Image 1 (cartoon, rainbow, N blue to C red):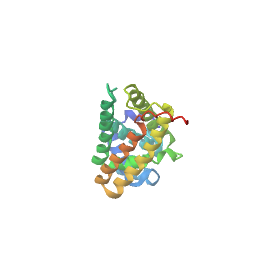
Image 2 (image 1 turned 180 degrees about the horizontal axis):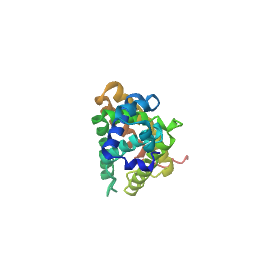
Image 3 (image 1 turned 120 degrees about the horizontal axis):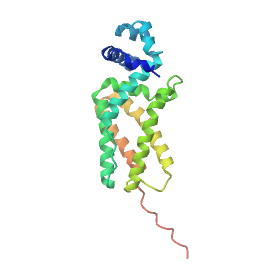
Amino acid sequence: MPRPRSSRLDPERRQTLLAVAAEEFAEHGFDGASYNRILERAGFSKGVAYYYFESKDDLYAAVMGEMLDALARRFGAWEAPARAEAFWRTLRERYFAAVAFVMEDARSARLLRGLSQARSHPKLQDTWGRFEGPLVAWFQRVLEDGREVGAVRGDVPETLLLASLMGIGQATDGWLLEQWAGRGAAALEEGAEQVFSLFEDLLSPRPARKPAARKR
């Protein structure tokens, strides 16, 4: 985690350091990024840098935190809908706002692609946890609000729905970013439509089952 005093670094110098670091992490990933190369390009001595950021891990966490804050602002705050139709319309708007963010910012897209691998990286568990915790809480609220208006199925436990949603989300995020990296923005947009359809199929209420006919 970045040292608390990192917030006291001159804002312009801090932004320079984080911008250079973001380019390095986006280009080379966490493992391939060079801490020394970042400091050299940003014009920081090791002594000054270590005063504010203890390690490359800390600098990575700060970069990802800024990028995820920007994504959250683009995603927008969730407001409880009054009807099922409004629920799906709002959820779709939020989802495709995040897709647009990726399409418009190639550096952030590459950073997100790297973050999708962070959950299994031994050095990045804290960074992944800071990302995953708020995301789980956000989706839990979405599911609760969806059930309130009849837009989300109630025939399975909410905890199972949440676990399934997060699992599919992690898998499809990685798949979408691979589509973007290999085939460009059009493939990302097409894939996003397919992924959102998967979410609808998973969450939408099922028709009531007719009781089995009794044998005469």
